[in-house]
Amino acid sequence: MGWQRICRLDELPVQGSRVIERSAHSGGNVAVFRTASDRVLALLDRCPHKGGPLSQGIVYGESVACPLHNWSIDLNTGCALAPDEGCTQRFATRIDSGTVYIDLDAGARAPADPRPVEQVGADD
Image (cartoon, rainbow, N blue to C red; front, side, top):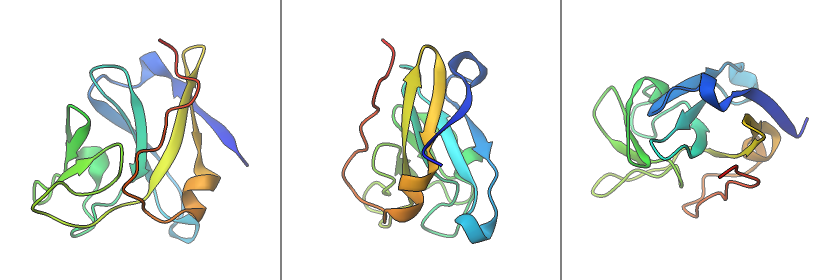
């Protein structure tokens, strides 16, 4: 499938999220987040702690607070911030001419990794 169009950047709330619904067989839902600085990042919509829906959490800086137990998850890496531990799957995103795209295939194949996924082709 490769890069898939998600929405226009202005349709994604600042410091908010949007859910891409997928079956459990294809890996589960994906949460796409927009930071206050207009970065767009995407994670599997599942906290590594107890599986809480990250899309319902509060976005602050480049992190999201899980709504179940307030674990902070770094949106760049998908990993919990210390002292908590664990990572959730990340997905590459890009913004092209004000449109948000995500590579769901690459994320579904790659394990969680603490290194940031670069936002390619982002508009300034």
